[in-house]
Length: 336
Image 1 (cartoon, helix red, strand yellow):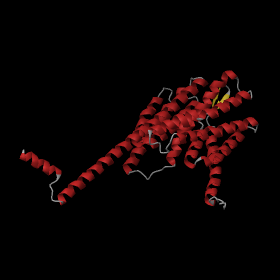
Image 2 (cartoon, one colour):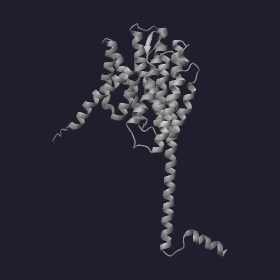
Image 3 (tube, rainbow, N blue to C red):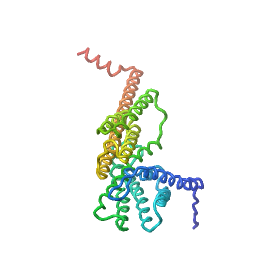
Image 4 (cartoon, rainbow, N blue to C red):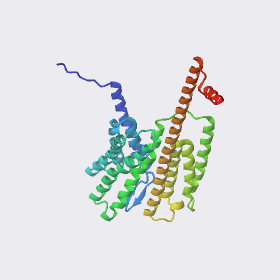
């Protein structure tokens, strides 16, 4: 009996070796981008949108589970830049790494497809990748703050909720955009580019105005979001939602526009309600529209194939010297 020793492809090993620092760098950069805008809830600093969770889930869906060391390394670097190393810091690191990994495993279990072309894919990302998986990181983080005495028990649930919503928003807003970028299609027709440019111009004018106006005008974003979803599906709706969420977050942290006279808790509630509604509407609406488009195209292909089959049968009968089916039908009617 001979033993066969398997050898790994050196090119694959090199790819994995490069993926780890690349994923870590993306995590680190996105983490510091998220830290540019912070809110204080019950004495604890939280981010309304935590992009690293979205980056982590997207990397796992694109590259597979082998990129988790890069997520852990990126989380370690972010924590190291914020605080000194301690056993509690490593516990937070474990939670921040386990949450996206759990989300990835849940999505794989549900048969998730990265093109987000089905309604079930959008629902899976919302309820499994965001809402369920991010319970791990928020519970771990808020629990560590409570255990170390940095957080009082009466404030636990407020901080936990803010942490959970921020992590979930990162998945809902950032992950679809990164999945979209990983599946770039050939350029659109010129007419589509004109419409896309016009829509982008309108969004860039209306959204900042709605976010910073003292009059509550945030509802003006929704017609633009629907337009983007109807005409450009996931690409249009998620980019619109991302831009609107960033503008709303800037206005909330600056206490301007509709967030000017609100308390800190009210600012967090209003901002996260808006961001969550935007992300859910963009994701679910674009998935439904894409699914309907694919269904219509399938029906059109089936009809075209049926027409070709009937034409082939008609041509075959004519070659055999028999009258086509419709001619025979006309003949019978004349005899009658």
